[in-house]
Image (tube, rainbow, N blue to C red):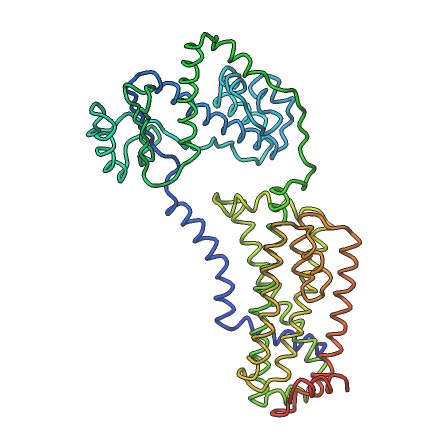
Length: 501
C-alpha cells in the first residue's frame, strides 16, 4: 500500500480511538435532542387569558370581535404561506371558493377579507381544501394557536365595586392558571370599563401581569376609540354609516413579490444553512487540528517520529497526516449532518422547522459542488497551519505560543463574517473576505445561499487553491528541516529561513 495512505490510515485510527473524538461526535446529536425536548418541556403553552369587565355593556362584544378578527387574520397569513411553500396552484384553491381570499399568499388582510373567509366556511373549510390539494409528503396544515383567549371573570374576582377593587382582586389571579377552552392559561390582561366611561376624565383601566403586550393593548384601545368616535360623529350630526363607507375605500395597487432569494427574510433563511456548515467546518477544524497537533508533538517527544521517518519520507508523513485528519473531519461533519437532516424530516420542533426550508438553499448541483470544494479546501488550508505548529513545537507548552494567536486569527473574523452575512450578504466586508484565502472558505460558504456570481466563485476558488499550493511548499520544507531538530526550533526568522532553504 502507498506510504501516504498507510500514514493516513494510522492517523485516522489514532484519532478516532480517542475518547474526546467520540464525545465530540455525540455532542451535536445530544445538543439537537436536548433542544427538541426542552422546547416541548420548558416552553409555556401559547396564548394568554384575557378578562374584560364592561360595566356599560357597550364595548365587550366589539372587543371580542376584534380578538376573533386578529385570530382569523393570522390564520389567513399562515394559510397563504402554507400554500406558497408547498406550491399549491391558486386556481385550484379558488375552484370551490374556499381559498379565494388567501390563494395568492400572505398579505395585509382587511375586515372584508376576513368576512369573506368566514362566509366561505372559515378555517375548517380551508383545512379540508388543503388536505385534498396538498402534495404527497406535505404535512397537514396546523392552524395558529390562539394568542388571546377571552374568559369570563374567574371566581373571587370583584366586578361590581369599581376598578380599584377589580384590580386588587385580580392581582392574585395573575399568578395562577385559569380554565379556558384550550386548556389552563394564565391571565395576561384584565380590562375594566367603568359604567360612566366616556364622561370627561373617566378612563378604562388595564391590569397586566407585568409582561408588556403593546399590540394586545392597542387592539383593545382601537375598539374603544372606534365606538367613541362613532358616538361623537352621531352627536355632531354626521352619519356614521356614510363615514364607514368612505373609510372602506381602498386605493387600487398591485403588489409584486421580490424575486426568489430577494427579500431579506428569504436571504437570511437561505444563508442560514451554509452559515451553519461554515460553523461546522470551523468546529471540526479546531477539534481535529488539535488532535493532530497533540499526536505529532507526542511522537516528537517520545522519539517515535525518528522510527516513523526511517520508513517513510517527510512528504509521505505530511500528506498522510493531512489525508487522515481530512477523513476524520468528513466523518465527523457527515455524521452530524445526517443526524440533523434525519431529525428535520422525522421530528417536529424549532430545529426541524428551520432545516426543512433551509435545505432548499443547497438543492442545486452547482451550490452543492461549491460548498463541497470550499469545505475541503478550507479544511486543508487550516489543517496545514496546525501541522506547521506541530512541526516546530517540542511540547504543548511550546505549541500554545503559536496555537492561541492562530485560533484567534481564525475565529474572531468568523464571528464578524457571520454577523455581516446575516445583515447584508452582498455587503463589502463579506465580499472582501471572500478574496482573503484563509477566510474565503467561511465567507463563500456563508454567502452561497444568497447567490454569488460564478466569476467570483471561480476566482476566489482559484486563489484559495494557489494559497494551498504555497502552503504545501512551505510546510514540506519546514517538515524536512524541523521534525528531527528537537530543541532547535528558534524564532520566527529561523523558521522562515528553514522554509526558504
